[in-house]
Length: 300
Image 1 (cartoon, one colour):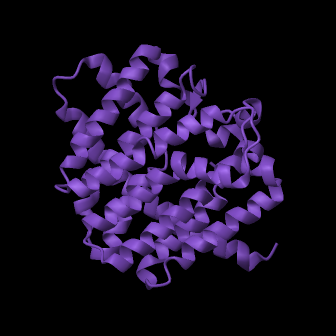
Image 2: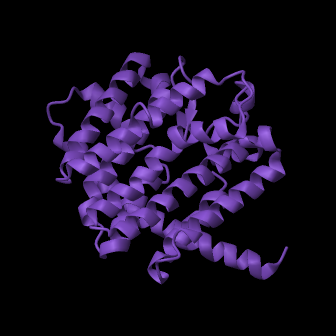
């Protein structure tokens, strides 16, 4: 291994991790303030929501929204309502994905899943509440266009639609194009919307919005390819969940379809496409360039 390349990789990852940490801390405080404002919510419901919402994680989607607003305007504060909404939707989706009727997972981020601790009914209802209150949070942005952007990314042609395609695809051999479409909906749509929502709230020009849209589409795909690879080679202690679950459920994945080495090459190529989308930006977009590399090099 080239020591200089390894050093560069560590520097890039450090930039990405510092960005995610700073944004995550601020999103965490905003989310806690939101939960504390729900004074009329039943105590059990609050407990289930907070158990899942504050279980850790990279907070990638809200960080992307905040980063996009900051990139185009120098100020990420207008994007905070959307950032909170995006994390709430992401968390609800994980809670429902973990249910016995879906992926039937008993670990998430190294902790027992919500339905294991609080029961299936409470996990379903807490997920329902998070999805509903996410749009209450998004409305605080004052932009109906942003609320619609997030709704469409989360809905029938986005994340939920992708989950249906995923369930219907078990025990089937998908083509590469079918696999791309599945993940463009299930994973990519909300990541793309995170960039677009932040850029819109930052007052992005049409060119900047288009560039960040392309960046979001590319990193959404790169993120999923990396996830598929980690399900094969990752360490359970680092991932905080079981590995090999895709193979156990007979799901089509990039390593299964292309082989592990070609899947890694495709992840690298897609990260390169993401960075190419930022060509119109200067060094102010370097943190997004670092994120594109971090997404494919992460171990969890």
